[in-house]
Image 1 (cartoon, rainbow, N blue to C red):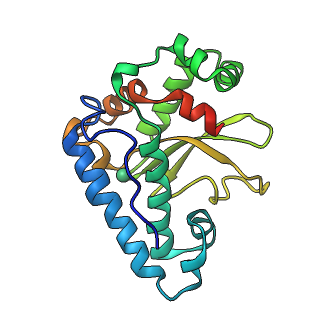
Image 2 (image 1 turned 180 degrees about the vertical axis):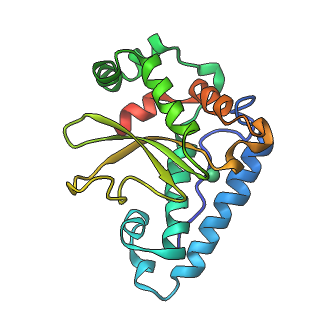
Length: 204
Ligand code: MN
Protein backbone atom coordinates (compact mmCIF):
# COMPACT_ATOMS: atom_id res chain seq x y z
CA UNK A 1 0.00 0.00 0.00
CA UNK A 2 1.59 3.24 -1.15
CA UNK A 3 0.85 6.58 0.47
CA UNK A 4 0.55 10.05 -1.03
CA UNK A 5 3.72 11.98 -0.07
CA UNK A 6 3.36 15.01 2.17
CA UNK A 7 4.76 18.20 0.64
CA UNK A 8 7.86 19.46 2.48
CA UNK A 9 6.47 23.05 2.30
CA UNK A 10 3.15 24.92 2.63
CA UNK A 11 0.59 24.84 -0.23
CA UNK A 12 1.34 28.49 -1.04
CA UNK A 13 5.14 28.23 -0.61
CA UNK A 14 5.91 28.07 -4.33
CA UNK A 15 3.91 31.17 -5.34
CA UNK A 16 4.10 32.81 -7.83
CA UNK A 17 6.05 30.20 -9.82
CA UNK A 18 3.58 27.42 -8.98
CA UNK A 19 0.28 28.75 -7.62
CA UNK A 20 -1.60 27.28 -4.66
CA UNK A 21 -4.35 26.34 -7.10
CA UNK A 22 -1.97 24.38 -9.34
CA UNK A 23 -0.37 22.70 -6.33
CA UNK A 24 -3.80 21.73 -4.92
CA UNK A 25 -4.76 20.05 -8.20
CA UNK A 26 -1.34 18.65 -9.08
CA UNK A 27 -0.55 17.09 -5.70
CA UNK A 28 -4.03 16.64 -4.21
CA UNK A 29 -5.84 15.41 -7.35
CA UNK A 30 -3.40 14.23 -10.05
CA UNK A 31 -0.76 12.59 -7.84
CA UNK A 32 -3.40 11.28 -5.43
CA UNK A 33 -5.21 9.75 -8.42
CA UNK A 34 -2.06 7.92 -9.54
CA UNK A 35 -1.44 6.62 -5.98
CA UNK A 36 -5.07 5.44 -5.60
CA UNK A 37 -5.11 3.78 -9.04
CA UNK A 38 -1.82 2.03 -8.40
CA UNK A 39 -2.98 0.70 -5.03
CA UNK A 40 -6.13 -0.71 -6.68
CA UNK A 41 -4.16 -2.27 -9.56
CA UNK A 42 -1.54 -4.07 -7.46
CA UNK A 43 -3.81 -5.61 -4.82
CA UNK A 44 -3.30 -9.39 -4.86
CA UNK A 45 -0.44 -9.22 -7.39
CA UNK A 46 3.34 -9.74 -6.86
CA UNK A 47 3.76 -5.95 -7.22
CA UNK A 48 2.04 -5.48 -3.87
CA UNK A 49 5.21 -6.49 -2.02
CA UNK A 50 7.68 -4.65 -4.26
CA UNK A 51 9.27 -1.24 -3.74
CA UNK A 52 7.98 1.58 -5.93
CA UNK A 53 11.30 1.66 -7.80
CA UNK A 54 11.07 -2.05 -8.58
CA UNK A 55 7.45 -1.73 -9.72
CA UNK A 56 8.59 1.01 -12.14
CA UNK A 57 11.46 -1.17 -13.37
CA UNK A 58 9.51 -4.38 -13.88
CA UNK A 59 5.91 -3.49 -14.75
CA UNK A 60 4.12 -2.59 -17.97
CA UNK A 61 0.80 -1.13 -19.06
CA UNK A 62 -1.47 0.56 -16.50
CA UNK A 63 0.63 -0.56 -13.48
CA UNK A 64 3.74 1.02 -15.02
CA UNK A 65 1.90 4.18 -16.06
CA UNK A 66 0.60 4.83 -12.54
CA UNK A 67 3.78 3.70 -10.72
CA UNK A 68 5.99 5.81 -12.99
CA UNK A 69 3.83 8.85 -12.40
CA UNK A 70 3.99 8.34 -8.61
CA UNK A 71 7.79 7.97 -8.59
CA UNK A 72 8.28 10.91 -10.97
CA UNK A 73 6.02 13.25 -9.00
CA UNK A 74 7.63 12.26 -5.69
CA UNK A 75 10.99 13.47 -7.00
CA UNK A 76 9.45 16.54 -8.68
CA UNK A 77 7.66 17.82 -5.58
CA UNK A 78 10.57 17.19 -3.20
CA UNK A 79 13.05 19.28 -5.21
CA UNK A 80 11.38 22.67 -4.62
CA UNK A 81 11.60 25.39 -1.97
CA UNK A 82 10.22 28.88 -1.42
CA UNK A 83 11.37 31.50 -3.94
CA UNK A 84 12.72 33.61 -1.05
CA UNK A 85 15.63 31.14 -0.94
CA UNK A 86 16.28 31.73 -4.67
CA UNK A 87 19.72 30.58 -5.65
CA UNK A 88 21.56 32.58 -8.29
CA UNK A 89 24.05 30.71 -10.46
CA UNK A 90 26.83 31.81 -8.08
CA UNK A 91 24.91 30.50 -5.08
CA UNK A 92 24.15 27.19 -6.84
CA UNK A 93 27.92 26.66 -6.86
CA UNK A 94 27.96 27.16 -3.08
CA UNK A 95 24.85 25.02 -2.35
CA UNK A 96 25.80 22.23 -4.75
CA UNK A 97 29.61 22.31 -5.07
CA UNK A 98 30.16 18.83 -6.49
CA UNK A 99 27.25 19.00 -8.93
CA UNK A 100 27.98 22.53 -10.15
CA UNK A 101 31.61 21.62 -10.80
CA UNK A 102 30.44 18.74 -13.01
CA UNK A 103 27.89 20.98 -14.77
CA UNK A 104 30.59 23.56 -15.53
CA UNK A 105 32.89 20.82 -16.78
CA UNK A 106 30.26 19.57 -19.24
CA UNK A 107 28.33 22.73 -20.17
CA UNK A 108 30.80 25.53 -19.43
CA UNK A 109 28.34 27.56 -17.33
CA UNK A 110 25.27 26.95 -15.19
CA UNK A 111 23.35 29.23 -17.58
CA UNK A 112 24.28 27.09 -20.59
CA UNK A 113 23.14 23.97 -18.74
CA UNK A 114 19.79 25.58 -17.83
CA UNK A 115 19.23 26.66 -21.45
CA UNK A 116 19.94 23.13 -22.67
CA UNK A 117 17.58 21.62 -20.08
CA UNK A 118 14.80 24.10 -20.94
CA UNK A 119 15.12 23.41 -24.64
CA UNK A 120 14.76 19.66 -23.99
CA UNK A 121 11.51 20.60 -22.19
CA UNK A 122 10.12 22.82 -24.92
CA UNK A 123 11.02 20.35 -27.68
CA UNK A 124 9.38 17.34 -25.99
CA UNK A 125 6.28 16.48 -28.00
CA UNK A 126 3.16 15.95 -25.88
CA UNK A 127 3.17 14.92 -22.22
CA UNK A 128 6.32 13.80 -20.45
CA UNK A 129 9.32 14.66 -18.32
CA UNK A 130 12.79 16.13 -18.73
CA UNK A 131 15.48 14.54 -16.57
CA UNK A 132 18.94 15.26 -15.31
CA UNK A 133 20.60 11.99 -14.35
CA UNK A 134 24.02 10.92 -13.15
CA UNK A 135 25.93 8.08 -14.77
CA UNK A 136 27.94 5.67 -12.65
CA UNK A 137 31.13 7.69 -13.36
CA UNK A 138 29.48 10.90 -12.10
CA UNK A 139 28.96 12.46 -15.53
CA UNK A 140 25.58 14.03 -16.21
CA UNK A 141 22.99 13.46 -18.90
CA UNK A 142 19.77 15.27 -19.90
CA UNK A 143 17.04 13.03 -21.33
CA UNK A 144 13.40 13.33 -22.37
CA UNK A 145 10.74 10.78 -21.48
CA UNK A 146 7.17 10.54 -22.78
CA UNK A 147 4.22 9.69 -20.57
CA UNK A 148 5.31 8.20 -17.25
CA UNK A 149 8.87 7.40 -18.42
CA UNK A 150 11.74 7.44 -15.95
CA UNK A 151 15.44 6.97 -16.81
CA UNK A 152 15.87 4.19 -14.24
CA UNK A 153 14.22 1.81 -16.64
CA UNK A 154 13.86 3.17 -20.09
CA UNK A 155 16.84 1.52 -21.76
CA UNK A 156 17.93 4.97 -22.97
CA UNK A 157 20.91 3.21 -24.48
CA UNK A 158 21.95 -0.41 -24.89
CA UNK A 159 24.80 -0.47 -22.35
CA UNK A 160 22.52 -1.52 -19.52
CA UNK A 161 24.08 1.20 -17.37
CA UNK A 162 21.88 2.36 -14.49
CA UNK A 163 21.14 6.08 -14.46
CA UNK A 164 20.41 7.96 -11.26
CA UNK A 165 17.76 10.67 -11.80
CA UNK A 166 18.43 13.75 -9.66
CA UNK A 167 16.29 16.56 -11.15
CA UNK A 168 13.11 16.56 -13.22
CA UNK A 169 10.69 19.04 -14.81
CA UNK A 170 7.12 17.84 -15.38
CA UNK A 171 5.95 18.96 -18.82
CA UNK A 172 2.47 17.48 -18.71
CA UNK A 173 0.04 20.35 -19.30
CA UNK A 174 -1.56 19.78 -15.87
CA UNK A 175 1.73 20.97 -14.33
CA UNK A 176 1.52 24.47 -15.80
CA UNK A 177 -1.71 25.16 -17.69
CA UNK A 178 -3.59 26.93 -14.85
CA UNK A 179 -0.70 29.36 -14.35
CA UNK A 180 0.98 29.63 -17.76
CA UNK A 181 -1.61 28.29 -20.25
CA UNK A 182 0.31 27.40 -23.41
CA UNK A 183 3.54 29.16 -22.35
CA UNK A 184 5.52 26.04 -21.50
CA UNK A 185 8.88 27.79 -21.99
CA UNK A 186 7.97 30.46 -19.40
CA UNK A 187 7.01 27.76 -16.88
CA UNK A 188 10.27 25.85 -17.44
CA UNK A 189 12.35 29.01 -17.08
CA UNK A 190 10.51 30.04 -13.88
CA UNK A 191 11.10 26.68 -12.17
CA UNK A 192 14.81 27.39 -11.63
CA UNK A 193 13.98 30.01 -9.00
CA UNK A 194 12.35 27.42 -6.70
CA UNK A 195 14.86 24.59 -7.10
CA UNK A 196 16.49 23.52 -3.84
CA UNK A 197 20.02 22.86 -5.08
CA UNK A 198 21.23 21.47 -1.75
CA UNK A 199 18.61 18.70 -2.12
CA UNK A 200 19.76 17.96 -5.69
CA UNK A 201 23.39 17.82 -4.51
CA UNK A 202 22.37 15.31 -1.84
CA UNK A 203 20.89 12.99 -4.49
CA UNK A 204 23.96 13.40 -6.70
MN1 MN B 1 2.30 16.01 -13.13
